[in-house]
Amino acid sequence: QVQLVESGGGLVQAGDSLNLTCKVSRVTFAINTMAWFRQTPEKEREFVAQEDYISRTTFYANSVKGRFTVSRVLNKGALYLQMNSLKPEDTAVYYCAASRKVYRTPTTAPTDYAHWGQGTQVTVSS
Image (cartoon, rainbow, N blue to C red; front, top):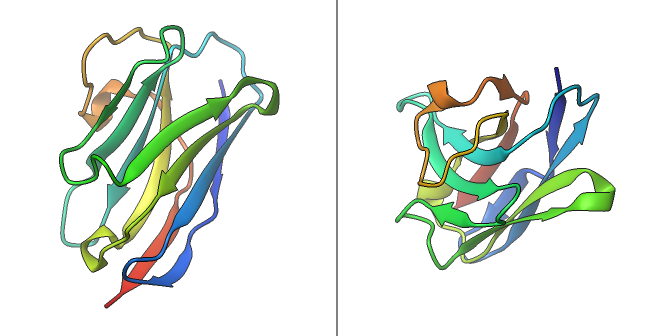
């Protein structure tokens, strides 16, 4: 098992930045892939960004490429999502996810991740 706790969400204006944190704890298996997803009431959960734990390779959804950066600090047990130039369409609940599987390509289906946090709300006003 693993516990994932997101934080850092909030209400910001278009063009602002936010840095989300996913605190990773109570890990009982080797995590090999972590990702960020987001969801609104009108849409299914969608892929945002992914990092391979071993190779540190990252993948991004086209909608956030160039604006968002996923990163990890080993000794802090945390995954981050730096979000710049935020747009109203970025408004959603953001979730981090973890998998013990190794994925060498963008892995965008929520069903590929077995472990999830509770989410943090990001609201971007125009």
